[in-house]
Length: 564
Image (cartoon, rainbow, N blue to C red; front, side):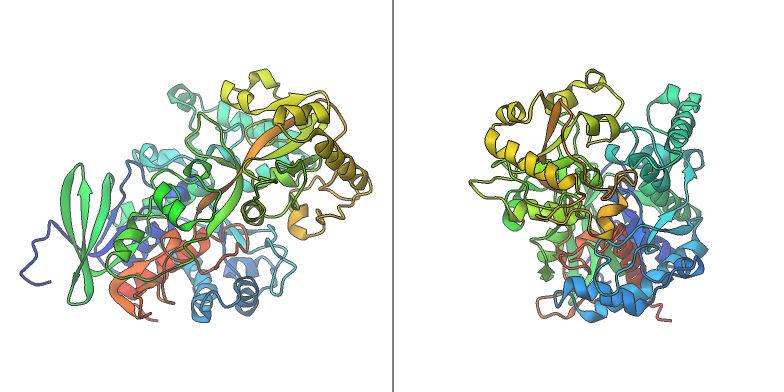
């Protein structure tokens, strides 16, 4: 490294961030006999990954093919290409579809993780290469007892991904209960009993030791790092990168107020999320309307890695894009709640400030969130929009923080303050300061078509993804039912996100590129720190974690010189 620098810590690979992509990179490097240090600026590890649904979208995996899925890497490439056009280099897409299955197999060998493909349809299955299922992979559950002290240091699941905001459920259990498939009541009883019967943990607090989704994924990756004796330093944030002779050789970080100079002999892998919780970066890059309050991401994603890389000449791309989602912001919660599936359930609509529908409410959350931004205008504002439903819907289905079967008065004050109720649609419009005649006409027009199972304006229920979270008992269209039974309800919905997707431009090896599009030696970027391989699109459930972990695997192998 030269005699001119004094290092506080030396390692082969420095990984910045502790989400699933970062931990995958750390495991990969450690298995290949490199010394590794992981740093995380907050007091908990796991990042947004730990709080998420924990699914990975990977085409043509060995696991899916063994389960009988019909898929090929070529179809995966064609599907991503159909969504991204020329926005992403072909070699990056090929690297993803070829290395994604290899990453899954590697983690199954190197860790206790097991991946199960599930019949979750692609978000745009109608496009070339799209599939009706088995590209989204769930991981195996874990009991928190096996994590020991790491359990309390791992970031908790987002409330929106749990029953009543506190009770974990599996992906199948959640889908069964949300859409009230046959047997859902038995499943509900099982899920509640599993939570309530853990008396020792209930005495400690509300958090469950039955870990699923992102908590299970991150927990098992952390166990693998423990087995390899890889240190993970909490409260240790990156401040800048150190370059010598054109190569990134180390980083400056702060820990408990002290500055650390960390040498990275073989490379630095930046995987600390996006910039969605930084108001200045949002205002400079994301289209309006925008607010940090509307992000469902964890609060530490403030673009530190992006800024550090830009300061040494890294190129960027897609900074105006995010993983969009309509969200509800509850005042006493630090993060917004995404409406992932509720909008697809029959008997609700979304309207703008003019009292008009303006989208297919059952579209994927990314499409719906982006539509909210694109359709915002002075005379028809979308921030907020209003999701409107009637007493029938209220009794059957969830809507953000509002739970069915639970009376209004039993919801906590912050939720009750959001929920608007009225005896007629016109009265509801008056409370929401919407044009009563326009909203009444909108509801009547929707109802007339919904009774026939049709949505001539926006085609709700026509695509496979729409129907995934429909209610199969409602025919002929599981996504449509009239709003007729008073009282009528409304909740404010904002154009939010679950993270930004623009960042450092990288190549097929996840190497950061300079403005000359040549690799910056010693520097890699993955996950939401990098410009997404998915371009402006969102192919399917797990299309954030799949690439983060795949390119974490790719980056670590390249950094330690594994080429086979």
